[in-house]
Length: 571
Image (cartoon, rainbow, N blue to C red):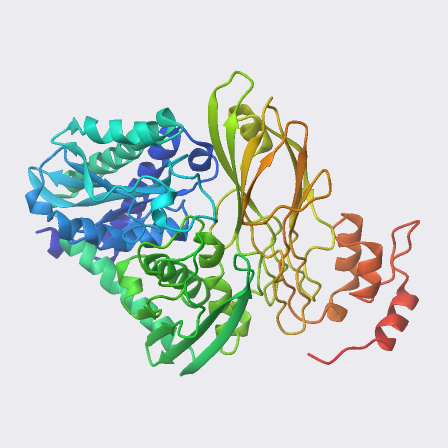
């Protein structure tokens, strides 16, 4: 029997085989995708699930907002269509924000896997659709009904036959029908690749199902997570994070209770939901809470349903982190990505050496829509990142998306598939918060449209008023800015018409520093000055390091005198 032969060595072999399978699943989706945000930026997830819809393994690519929401989403599919009621060739999908990843632009495709005629599990993936209709992706809608086409759990394929009626409805409601429908086929192709590879593995090892293997993996993940939680001192740890909101600041309040090997995260005290499209559904809140917890507490433990078991996440209904239907949710990432900062801020009271200072909160999403010079309709989105917060032993990464993990799309790729011209893209000097370990730098981009008519620019930007906090004496990061060539400043979460010939400059925020900047190694400051990351003035005023302007060398005597004269509080 397979169960009797499954020792530690074989378990490791099969685990790595599963990871290889889901990575092939994701690669197939990315290679077949019609959109740069999927194939270039990796805005997707892919994974394998047991019969009841518990996530067993995930691909290494993807975002927590897709992976960890997909982890709970598949359970809804399994309840709506129990696996034994399905047949080979069936496949399902939805973009319901409250079941999936929190907004209509993300579509989840779920496919039952059959081996020798028996349903043994599921493959699923989620990726961002280039368009879903409505008033285009943005933060300014009042209700979810304005934000696009809502697809409940439905069949994409029945016994191998495409649901053409559904696809005709999709095509009639989106601005880029070929790309959207093409990606649905790409998503199905990814699941089909995963299913074929799993069946090969099961035949090779004489497996009738994956239930015993899945249970063993999930139980071990749970045990390892509990052991990691048990290393944290019991207690309740709190924090509050202030973010820009739409027109008024919003508050994320968090308490993390650690009791033996259980952990409860409560967001009581968080601001109420708002009448704009920045609300977060509970599923997304859970996803971006469990991810930073894993980063700081148990980074070596596989991310699956077992590792979620010791963690309970609660948020009062009607708050901006557990928003109720039919509120608008299109730009939910503008709040959801800040949850890592609340988690790290709370845990800094317990494990300060394992958390990061505040960062820029991941993504600035730029949605552009209009007509190209040939009169064709286009709708294009790309993601950009500011600076990460510093750690207790390392500088923050610059222009890096955390916690989303989205990669920046090269300017050449953007210009190849859209009329967007990127005239400038460089790091912002002095945007990273000063510290013994410096915050990551934001970036500056200048955009112009290669069109004859105005283009609708939907802005989804935060940290334009509330800077990323430094930790333990570190400085705050710089806030972001959106500035047009005429000097005007559009609403950072609104829409406006970008005129032909007009440019818009995006200055992304920087991350916070860690520890007092006066304790940073002067040679590291000098290196930052030489590389253009820190100005001569900031080196002197923030770090207390005097750099000669001519030869770009440290004036050691002047630096020592300055640091003594302006000594700050001890660490």
